[in-house]
Amino acid sequence: MIKETEDFYPSRTGNEETILPRIDPIVYGNVQPGIEYSLTLPQMENYQENGFIVLPDYMPEWVNPLQKEIESLRSLMAGREELITEPESNELRTVFKPFAFSHIIDQFSRHPKILTIARQLLGSDVYITQSRINIKPAFTGKSFPWHSDFETWHVEDGMPRMRAVTAWIMLNENNEYNGPLYVIPGSHKEYVSCAGVTGSRNYDQSLKKQEAGVPKPETMQRLLKNREIKGVYGNPGTVVFHECNLMHGSPDNISAMPRTLLMFVFNSCENKLVAPFCDQPPRPDYLRNTDSSAIE
Ligand SMILES: O=C(O)CCC(=O)C(=O)O
Image 1 (cartoon, rainbow, N blue to C red):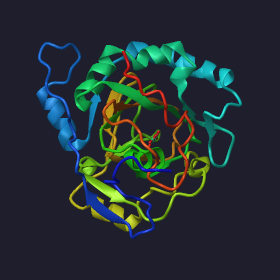
Image 2: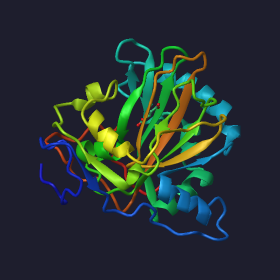
Image 3: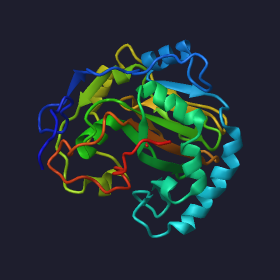
Image 4: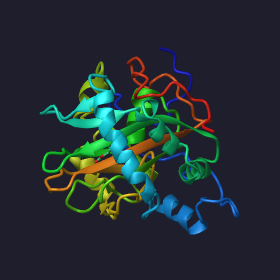
C-alpha cells in the first residue's frame, strides 16, 4: 500500500527499541474567553504539562442512563465483532463503536461539555476515530499493559501526527482498588519507538492482551526516571481528557467493585488517517472509523 505521508514516528520497524522526541504540539487551540465549557488557561497548562486533565463530577446525570444503555448493548450487539472478550474467559472486556448502536451514547459524544474541549485542545473541527467501553468486572477484570495509544493508531491505523485526544467518563467510582487507569504525567512529550513488527491481524490478539507496541521494562525504567506513576481516581460522572501519546495502563480489578469506562477518541479533521505505517492492511472500521466528517 502506498504511504501518503512521511513516517515521523516509526515504530515496530524491526529496529532496536528507542525513545524519540515528540515533534508535534500538545495543545493546538487557545483559551476561549466567554465560550461555555471551554478550558481555562491553568487547565490548558495542566494538560500541556501532564498530558491529561481530570474534571471531577463533571457529568453525573449521564451515569445511570449510560450504564443502562451499556447493559442493553450486551444483548443488542451479541455475537458481533465489536465485542471483545477477556483472553482467558468469555467475559466481556471491550465494546467498540458503541455510538453506532446507541442514540444515547451518540448524543453523549456530541455534548458541548465534551466537544468544546476536544475542539479547543485540537484547535480544529474533530471527528471520532475510535470509541470503546472498557469493562472490568469485580474480581475478574484484567489489566492493560503500559502503552501509548498513538503508537498503535499510527502504526496500525495510519494516524499521521499527534493531534488526537481521548475523552472518557467514569461510570463507577474509580479508586486505587478497582483497576483504575494509571498514567505517567509528562510521558506524552516523548515517543517510544517499539521493537518488533506488526503481525497479520495483530488486533485479533492485541485487543485481548496487547504485546506489540508495549515498551520493554528497560524502556519504561528510562521513561520513569524523574517521573512518577499516577492513578486516575474519581466519582461516577468524572470526565478525563488524555492526550493520545500519554503512556498509560491499568492493573487487574481484584476488588468487589466493577469499573466501566466509556471512551471517545477525537482526532483533528486536519489529521485524517492515511495508509497504516506497517505492512498490513487497515484494521476494520470499528477500530478505525472511516467516516471522518466533522461532528456537529
Ligand atoms: O480500561 C483500562 O483500564 C485501560 C484502557 C486503555 O489503556 C485503553 O483503552 O487504551
